[in-house]
Length: 437
Image (cartoon, rainbow, N blue to C red):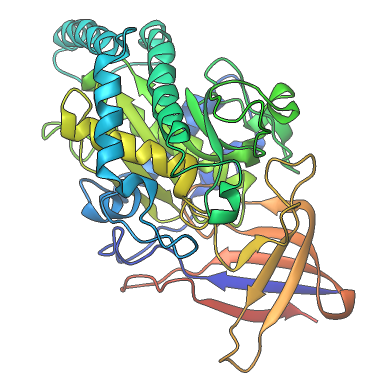
């Protein structure tokens, strides 16, 4: 039996490419996660605050271009522009949201206005200190009040896309489209099959999650926010989550610091970093995670990877241009983005259509090191869930899995991200070395 080590680069160069170094794991990377207790979440996020101080980039246009639908490419399968590139459809959806009789946009604005007043009063009492609070549960009642309104907005977006029969049909999977749900999950914790600590280290509840789910049958096609499959009825797994959405009632609780608090890592951003960390544990071959923050009527998109965080600019859904960007982003999450677009390393992909992150068992992945142009190209098939996965956000993201190599030789496959000192990382470049013969 052999132990094979894969060391990979990370981060496309158009996202935060001016980051030059990556921080090594600190003591919290392992120690804290072995000792889950009633103060575990607060301690982990406090450590994340210290670790991320020099590893966050704000208002980076690379995130916006890559994730928010501002760069449109032609679908090579259908020879048509992507759904998010159909400006007429996007404007039609914006108009529908404005005319919605349930007035969800207006409800979010009212909640945000009231929450802003309460937050301003709290800060005045705290002498201007923004994040002087002992718990992440501040304003939770107001956040929960936002749930049905955001659910309604997402539902209108998805229904509008489904009703546009030129774009989406039941056989759209063959045209390169995906099917995901954005699900309100703030009152229930996703399950995990982590080999070390199980659910003890995963007691977190993102407000909304972007989940990989089976393509619906004709009866349920186009219905969103509902548990229409046995997979959802049994509950979600952390490995099903492609991205997350975190809500805050007040606009003042955004993830990006003000000029007076910079470079502090805000409470909201630490919370998002913790969710990203848990998704990376559940998907060891994922090298970044996308997170969306809706703070009142302001929204931001974040790119979380092993080197830190890159944040987009702020958008406001009260304005038509900001709402249009939000619509495009939701469309891209639900339909257009492939596994690789959502952070999965393209050298480790599910071996076939039956190997999925929403299946009953952990998917088998085909892991490739090297290319046809190099002297050696190795291919392995992973077996079951990983034996070990790093519980830190920053660092190398080491994982170990059982795998089968040439001639069904059993190996232990170790994967880790390669750190670059003094220069931006290379893209998707892999290096193979056999550690133990």
